[in-house]
Image (cartoon, rainbow, N blue to C red; front, side):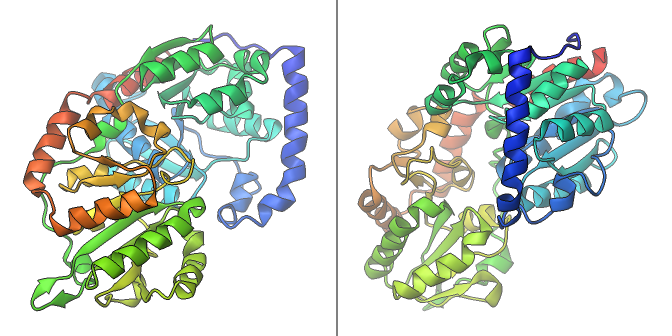
Amino acid sequence: MPVPRKPPLVARAILGVYGLAWRAALPGLRRNGRLKDGWDARLMRSGPPPKADLWVQAASGGEAYLAWELARRLPDCLPGGLVDGRPPRVLVTTFTSQGMGVLARAATDLAGRVELLPAWFPFDIPGNMAAALAAVAPRAVALLETELWPGLLAACRRAGIPALAVNARMTPKSLRGYLRLPGFWRCLGPERVLAVSEDDATRFAALFPQTRTQIMPNIKFDRLDFSASAPNPALAALLPQVDGVRAPFIVLGSVRRQEEAQALAIIQGLLARLPGAVVGVFPRHMERLNAWEGLLERGGVPHVRRSAGAARPGSVLLWDAFGELSGAFALARACFVGGSLADLGGQNFLEPLAHGVTPVIGPSWSNFAWVGHELFECGLARLEQDAAGVLDALCALADTPPDRQDVRRRAESYAQSRRGGADAACQAVAECLICG
């Protein structure tokens, strides 16, 4: 276990400036639509987070699913599945309402084996974060992917609580930003880093040379479920039938604000070349729904919100319900996964494969380089260089979809050799819980 110690004087001065910057930013953050939910909890005005054995920080919905998998497997790494004779108490914090929705389902799913406690992540103001950590009093803190928060890391260092970065990834761009203050970050480094690729591990080692760094498989491979299941009838009912056959359905998933104009051009092209098709649009952030409606209206594209009922052939179904993207993939002939046409690093494009659908992405996928180029080389995914290429690929796949069973079988074989990340992460966490 780490020895409690204060950060050096220079680091404490930087943390002081960092805290002042947070407080100066609060009035602007108060107007942010994504932060309005749980505002008092983020400032701890409604009380601190609850006491727990483990604190996991999961930024949003995607990381919340990883936290769910981590918590699900944690009892298997503990003596008798227990901590002090009871199921482990796991606090999982998140920034977004989507993350909170996932965690609420996880808490129900794990009841009896794990006491999972969803909560809003407190704003990383150093003094507030120290109070939050003291209230939770965890034996360990697990930071998923790239959740490196100075206030929380400094509080862990002062309290002697081990912080672990698990399923950790870091882009070259992020590393360059962190290295503007290398001494500051090095004195706050986590106790251990489990990175998802050799390149990510190298970048973490450059930032935290004293930290024990190793490679683990990505938990996202563990989360892929290749068991065949029938499409959700409620979602299938949203798609019209033409001459007794369901209209071709193309999904644009996790579309980010910076690529909306390109996505609109793809939609217009799809409806022109596939006149009877329905395009399902899933904005990455729900607060963009109104902006999307305006965009579609200005583009002359007929559309309806998913909550309003079924779509017509040759229109857009704008999804305003969170958590149904997987079910939409099960109905789709083709799909595009966003965050990849703008320079954003991409979003997770593995899930369509579990439904036998070949994902199409744009050129930006650095956040998912750990997946490997082999996925594209063997044709399980399509990598295109611009919106025109994405449009052509979607039209080709929608016109002649690959056999779902074959795609699912090949993708399962690809994923099987890359599983084991959740077990590796849980083992590292369990060591801290047992020693603590």
